[in-house]
Image 1 (tube, rainbow, N blue to C red):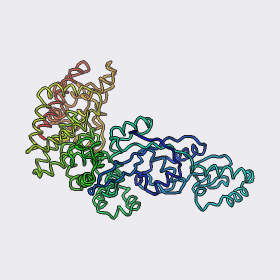
Image 2 (cartoon, rainbow, N blue to C red):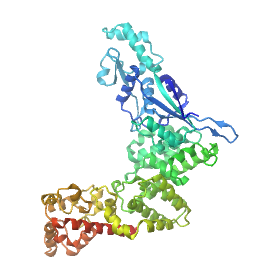
Image 3 (cartoon, helix red, strand yellow):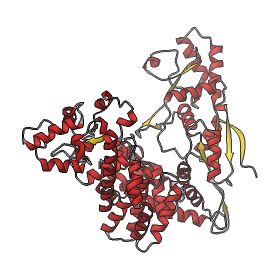
Image 4 (tube, rainbow, N blue to C red):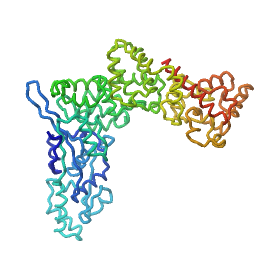
Length: 599
């Protein structure tokens, strides 16, 4: 059996099929992302009879119903959504939804004399040569004869016969040919993804999450569109809460639903620590409820696939949609989400830039939801989730094959009578003495400030409520919250003057520290033994401070300790730089270890 069929259709036919729901566009309620100039260029290509690429449809598998009959699957438009939406908007005048969830028209103008398309603008509105909106020409009420007479009166430089020819050519866009690739319902999700990538390698790669969202959207029998909107709107509002009124006004049916009521709390939420995309939400909900990691399995389950018999059954589709919907509702639940964020913050993660691994935080939320279902005592949930999140970052657990590891870990957490035992087992295997004293120290040998290991060090400082370097009252957390800068302990310009010009050397993260700008300016280009000598002097003599506010020897010692600065700093200059970096890496690794152990 062929994996696909290739046919040709017309613009008019495809628009008609969509109106009659013969083909489902999963993105119908999602923002239109094309710039209006791309719509203009698409129409110009069709007018000139240029090829505009294929659209790709994938037919849902036929599912076996309880009474033994078979339900034919609906075709899903998986590639070409933007093109079809663009044509529909320009030709029929249908409104689209922009990135702020506002409805608007895309008006494409046409100049018959120059045979040129353009996005309508104020200058065009004042120019009699332009047809201000081509949807007028495609309207069933358009009178070609009357329009030609009126246009030629305003623009006598063009003859009626010539205008007639050009307008008929414009109207022929409706009958322009568009290629259609129809993928067989027998293809699995991996094969469909591979076909898409190979055909459309220069476009935006369609992910398996996109396929899953398409499957969700087109199943109206089991509230698919409602689930899709819940996911989409939640993920949009958590990043752009100001668009709440636009969504409410744009989609009045959904805004009166119980699902919308469940997400409206987000409009007043202002934390940016975890801003999940629809892919993140889908992954968490799926792994939590189905104890699986591969999104391709979700697509199969939503299609009703029985993994043992390889048949497609309606009862599996129904159960899968019900399960997924519950997972989505648990994810977006205000109490669950806010409690999880508090756990994340309690680990010292007070800024999104401190956690670069979305997979680590996604699994942490998955784990939180699972443990909550197991009715574990609240403090134990907090402890396990907090520790596992940090362990995941320490070991980069989900950087390789996240789907495989997600499934491996969630199943083992699920089967353990005491989930803490699994945490302890992994901890013993992954975080050995060699890890803390060698591997982590080596991982800190980098100049990449976005390194997860530098972030872990900063998290340990936030967790410990540490003061910034040479600061008496300003905390590291204050500087993070106010987007303060990191500075060099061995000043960059000082090292450069001494011949150390390699950026990878003087920008080592072991040479970085969070400190106030006023302290950094006072240090200027001085060698550590010079500026630290001044600090020690102000502490011994209890004089007015020249660098920072610390004037007490004991406070200075504590400050150096929490910032992992060796006491030998008082005698160091550029000749000791390599020695300093090694000592500080070891101190930073020990601080991270103490932090992890205390979580």
